[in-house]
Amino acid sequence: MASPQRKITLRRIAESSWVPPFAFLILIIVLWDLTVRLFKIPPYLVPAPKDDRVPEPGAARLAHGPA
Image 1: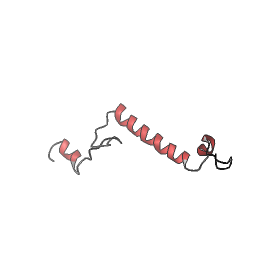
Image 2: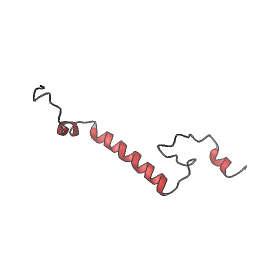
Image 3: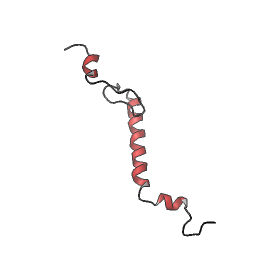
Image 4: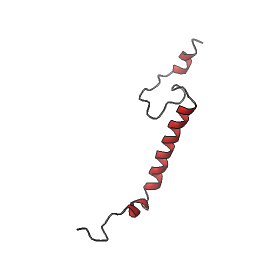
């Protein structure tokens, strides 16, 4: 069995230096996705994080017709 010093506990993981930045990144992505969905923002303005389609350059201009 692992010695008490080597034992990985949930508390030790939560107190590590990488958890807060990683949790913040996940929170930002979730808020981004919710904002795009709730306000129905078109993908050519702000694509959703899970949207696998990449808007083509000039897609916003083409959506409104020729200039």
